[in-house]
Image (cartoon, rainbow, N blue to C red; front, top):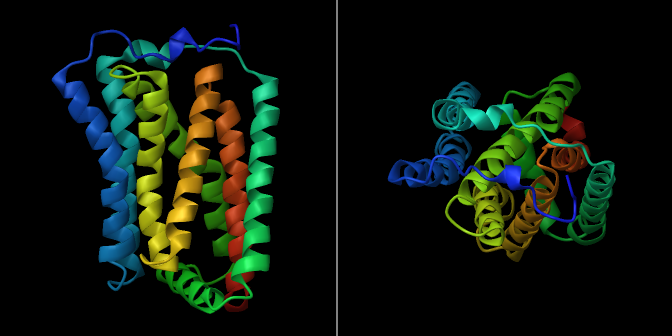
Length: 252
């Protein structure tokens, strides 16, 4: 495959788009935000058991929907093969490391010395405790799950399904932007919980997440594979949990 040209295989182009396809892609873009609102906001005072149950059910619906839909209507997509691109993998690794380095610099040089740090630390500890994480081993297990598993599920969901699906209806650039904004949307809720709806950090960091989504969608479009964006995403998630450890290490 010529890496200088977009992969033709990246299109879900048969059969033609229908009204049910619109419903599917809109549902896929909205459900992560709804799930996040339920388990992260609306049930935040209901105890860890209810949060974990809501989280499990919500994520099962979210991540199960694309593969079921594709299996029914676009089964040929499941058999699609494409080439690995070592250059894109290295680029993804570099991007991930750059993001992690930026996170640590922003936190230790800008956030930690400010008044925001105390409130952020308290909110992170509250949320981790609400999830039933009370030991270093549980925290490590949670971080490992998000780094290895959840990062893949998000790439499969937002790039393999939503981004690819949107290309049935619009240009590649528009599909990239729309899928990345959808990817950003539920993160806005998470960031607002920690920084507040009035904080500029909530929206600045949200835009950074959208930019990351655009980069990973671009990588996926170039290669037709999730390998490069997944590795890059893993590095970013590992950095997030590493930084989080500095905030909650006293309670583990």
